[in-house]
Length: 292
Ligand SMILES: NC(=O)c1ccc[n+]([C@@H]2O[C@H](COP(=O)([O-])OP(=O)(O)OC[C@H]3O[C@@H](n4cnc5c(N)ncnc54)[C@H](OP(=O)(O)O)[C@@H]3O)[C@@H](O)[C@H]2O)c1
Image 1 (tube, rainbow, N blue to C red):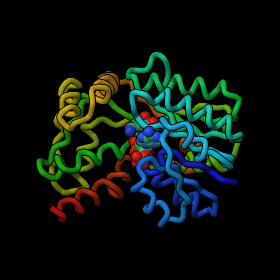
Image 2 (cartoon, rainbow, N blue to C red; image 1 turned 120 degrees about the vertical axis):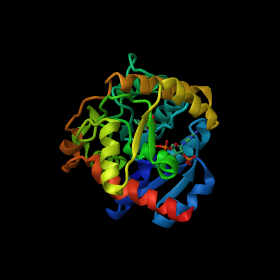
Image 3 (cartoon, rainbow, N blue to C red; image 1 turned 90 degrees about the horizontal axis):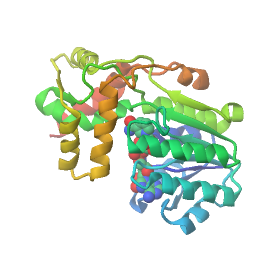
Image 4 (spheres, rainbow, N blue to C red; image 1 turned 30 degrees about the vertical axis):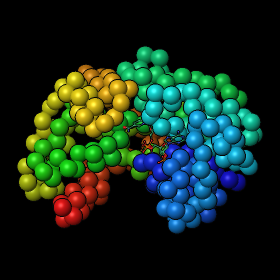
């Protein structure tokens, strides 16, 4: 059974692909940027280069595939690309799809990214191919983008105000996706995937300060300032607006809830923020500080 992984170089697939290979599954990794093929091939995955905006290449990538991990990148054309991905899946006779969507995706979602995921999820439910839709919360791994400021200034800037967010470790998303790819038990359902607790950025810096043995300060910023820093990083207006709209919603408590879906599907409790900090964030902080 060939399993095609889209988004194969991303934050979820980097944990999912090794787990599938460990279980001797036939993995085909769909790579968008060809220079990243070698890394996946060294792990033992077969690779294919394709883009969601190139239907011919998609058809070739999907040929002979039975199960699809369907992840589309955050992009202003994401739902159009996803429609092409669903059409190619039908054309190729793909039997099952595991979709990576986003928390509470739907027409009332707070950002264009969220609403696009909602449209794609509806299209997938109607397409006739058995599927399960996984809608993850804010990734803990997003905080890796803050490593430079954390190291340089001992500060964490965020536009979430005092609100709690039940952010999730991408390793848990990968664990859930692994189970969903290997068993049809959850087909026909939509699951919101969260971490085990809803935590504020005040609690995040408290945990980080304890682990690092030095004080890390939370600097709340406005969603407008966040959007400006996204523009300053060279990302386009769609991303700037998206970050603004999501963080405005989070700061108002939109993400302040947990679900038990990770444990119900993977059989393992979702990782706590402290575990992510100890195993992923703090080692990255040390490695980056040493390299500087
Ligand atoms: N970040 C969050 O907090 C969060 C929360 C909930 C849901 N999500 C959703 O999760 C998904 C992102 O997952 P991720 O973080 O694992 O991925 P990611 O790290 O954002 O990587 C994006 C992936 O998409 C591929 N890609 C880019 N353009 C493409 C194209 N034109 N055709 C085909 N593939 C293309 C990239 O391939 P190359 O590297 O080869 O270019 C890469 O593998 C998005 O749908 C996002 O909305 C994110």
